[in-house]
Length: 86
Image 1 (cartoon, one colour):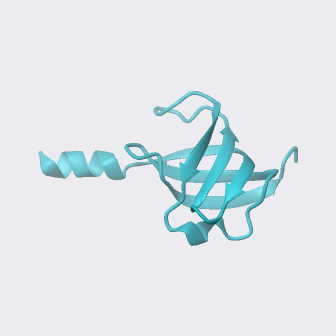
Image 2: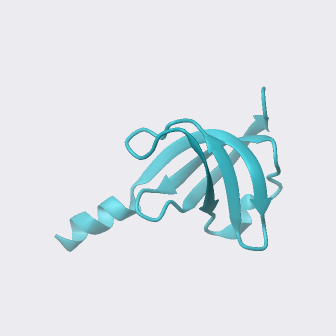
Image 3: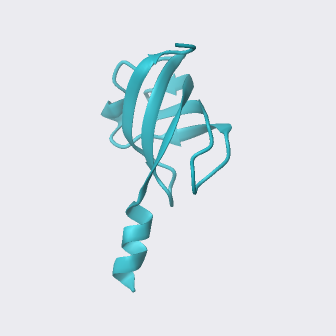
């Protein structure tokens, strides 16, 4: 049973949206995202990023794709795909 619980908590969900703020000091970003299938509806939400170095050059207005854990909503993958609106 423990193996099944661990697999579920480590599952990555994939989302896409636009960064509305970056707090590099706390290792978090706020993203206005589309619905994340199987996890949450579209909304604007702050997410911890682990490791914080994934934030890199990300800035307000960047369009991003990201992978996050389903249990803690921590971003584990972050890719800038372009400026907002493109």
